[in-house]
Length: 426
Image (cartoon, rainbow, N blue to C red):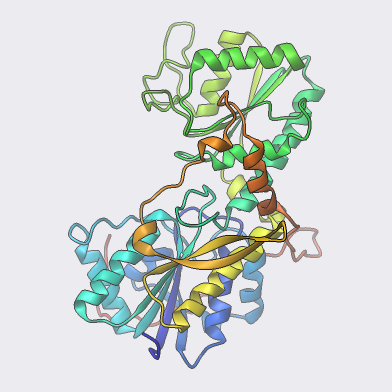
């Protein structure tokens, strides 16, 4: 499709990250610099919902300083969403509406920054465009803190959440250590419903055996309450304290999430199931079965948006991925997602980009390999640490205000006039 010209739309999807805006910045800056191909560059407000609702804004009219600030800003500046389109048959009206909006505005390029579901949407859009004879280029840009996208060595967003998680475990672990005569144990719950990459990253904090975290539990390893109790007791006997990191999606051998209603892991004195997250369930097990006080920490959305402590490598690679998507489009490439490729440069880490089929990435998941988990299933191996260390390297630059706080981008959003003549209701 080389030689095609027209407008471009960039959209963000799913949970925000510390670097998804850096990817958007890479797309926007590179596209605006190639105006002979991209006659305009629009942002979709709140991801694919913005396209469906024809809520587009002209990024070429933004203050260039704000565009530059995107790479130093957290969250999703264009606006994100969690709106899942199903198959072409089940959601055909939605896909047809997307093409209707694109036709009305002469949008010939679509850059979708997101995870598994986003790549699936992009892939199906390519299929329908081909069926209807609408010539356009669609390129995906990977994004997920969960690091579970297949066919890429790692995902933009993971390096920063890994750095934040490891440092939080390191600092909170020192708190437990200083007060271990009273606050004997701590459970720290992190994101990761199906994959344990974030939980595993806490292992980077452990420079010596006594350092936190002492125990790490991932969704990939079936959870046993009996073994957990034994693990904690063993840790208490060795160190006099125990710091535990758990992924929110840890589950038993039957696939039941330990925090699910009706589970048997956390019950009160009357035998009633106590509701809460995985970390809360583990806290109750520690207090009831081990008999020591246990604190519960949940980083919540702070872990994925902590731009103030982002990985320098992660920011650079996220921007690179966005720019690479536009460069691929300029070459006429479509129906691909940009991947991050690890290179061995004389024993030093180096990252480049590649391209993989959207259809291969769509809805596929990459779990933590078993060789990255220790034999006991309660920690990580040196192989994982070697994999993860380069991803958290470097300090990401911030622009600081006179008030001592970071300055983040705020887009003005100059709205594009609607042309389809009808509203869309989800």
